[in-house]
Image (tube, rainbow over all chains, first blue to last red):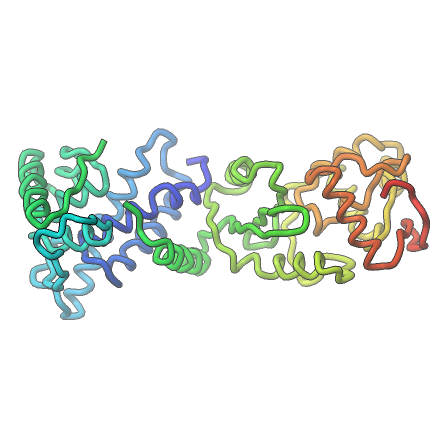
Length: 170
Length: 210
C-alpha cells in the first residue's frame, strides 16, 4: 500500500475493536488483540497490494490474533475452557437485561455478542460487526458458508430475544 | 455504533509506543496548534522530516510522506515532543537561533535547494531578514535568485529552517508555504522579541512592509 497506514487506523480502528471485543469479550484480551493486530498490519502494510480489501485483511489478522490471545490465556491456565477456538472462554459477560429495547448501545451489543456460544459469536462478530460476507467468514473460521450463515441467524435470534438488533451489513 | 474515543485513543497511544519499540514507526506524525494555524509535524527515527501548514492539506502531506519516505505513517506524538516544545517556546517569543535540541532529517531536500536552506540556517539569525538576492550571493550560484525563491518556497522544514526570514528586495514578504500572512506574523514575532527589525548582519534596520 502506498497510502499512509494512519488512514487505515482511522477508518477501521473502532470496527476492529468491536470485533475483537465481541469475540474475546470486552477487556484486556480484546485490547491486546487489537494492539497485536495493528502492529502486525503496520509491519506488513508496505507489501499489501493496492487493490486489497483493507477491512477484510485487518479482520483476518484480528481473528488470528484472537486465536493467539486465547492460546496464551490457556497456557497461563486462566479462564479458557477449550483452546484453541477463539472466544471459547467462560468469562461471564453480562447479557443485557431481557426486554430492554429502549436504547441499543454499541457496548451492550459487543458484550451480548461476546456472551453467545462460540460459533454464533464468531459468525455474528465477523459478519454483522466486521461486515465480512458469509463465505469469507467461512474461510476465516474453517467452516462451511451454510454453517456460518446458520450460526449467524441463531446468534441474531438470541440477540433479538435479548432486545438487541445487529443490523445486516450493507 | 461507536466505541468511546477514550478507549481507542489509549489503544492508539499504546500502538505508537509498540511500533516505536518494534522499529516499524517509519514516520510519526502529530498536529500542533500555533499562531499561524494548525501545523502537521512529521519525524522519522533520524529526526523531524517535515512541517506543514494547514493550507497545504494535511492529507496531501501525509500522502507525500508515504510516497517519498514510507507508507508506515502513524499518529505518534511522543517522537515529536522535542519539536513541539521548541515550537511552543519559539511562538512564546523565546529567541531560538537554530533548532536547538531538535534532530532534523533533511532527506526531502537535495542539491542546490539543500545548499540554500543550509546557508539560510547558518547565515540568517533570529530576527534578521535577507533578500533572495543576498542569500543567492552566499551560495555556489550567486545569481540564482529565482532558484533561491523556489528553495525557500518548498522548504520541507519551515520554522525550524527559517525560510520566513528571506524576503523580496522591495521588502514584501514573498512566497511562503504557510502564506504571506503567516510569514508577516513570524517576522513580526521575531522583531517584536528583539525590539526592532535587524538585517542579515544583525544590525537594527527599518525595512518597510515587514
